[in-house]
Length: 188
Image (cartoon, rainbow, N blue to C red; front, top):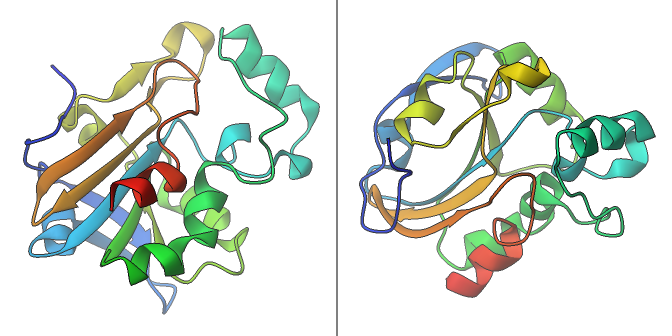
């Protein structure tokens, strides 16, 4: 399946998340995005180095991802993928973004723990795509089964207005060059 692109409609799909009352919920992407301007961004997995500040992660993870052929710029660690959206969420909201949605092929309990590691987060919803079904519907799955990591998501950031994709920044391999909050801000 071809990856989602500009002009495509966001497919609907059910994802899981823990709401503000700490209750596990199932939510459809269309219920979150219809009639709104949303950012939907995805990462290969919770707690992966590029997805958060590496000062909290052991060097081991760099070795694992580097062995997969992924290039990780350890100099770009203070403002990476998820922290970028968390810290710039107010600016994104001020530019008309209604929802900032993070999706990862992880179970909702992992996503809950990951969300708690960002105590200043007020606007990014951490959504679990446990079986990778939604990621596959986007055409953004990344099969790392041979490396023992299963099917994951490519790193990406989409901007959609009333379900229509207006920006599709999809990374190759383990790169982190076009899918950050800064690139979405430039597009707004």
